[in-house]
Length: 182
Image 1: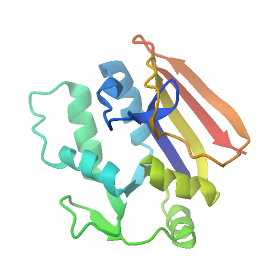
Image 2: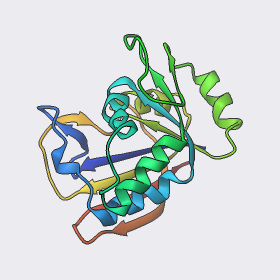
Image 3: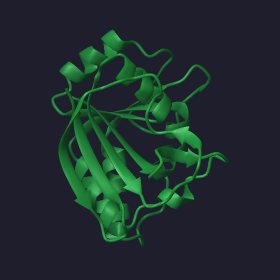
């Protein structure tokens, strides 16, 4: 199954109008929940900008970091990654390849043969996958902040019928909503 997970503001943005997302830094409790969801994933499909943010996990020193950080770094290293970009010349992380175009048929085939969940990361790439009818589950970690605009977590112009699978509240006010796409 192809899943989309995002950390968003209550008003539905993954970054504010200045491109900042410092308000989205997860607490240890939220990070542990993210890690638990990531354990189900075998391959990450990433847009270029999301890849550039996450690539820091490749070399980030984590020996003295909290256990949830060390855990996520290990999960990052152990997963295959496909970066969709027309401009990225090369990748800086292991187990990573570049695709120049998003081909729904190829993604459908990859997901079918994965044997585990495949995640799509970055709202632009996720929008393409959602519009193509490929995303089976949407997972939003909603933060108790309103940023008033920026990069939307979900695409405009798409209507989907969803079924609530899980709702979970964290001590810092973040709420996880997991929905399957009907």
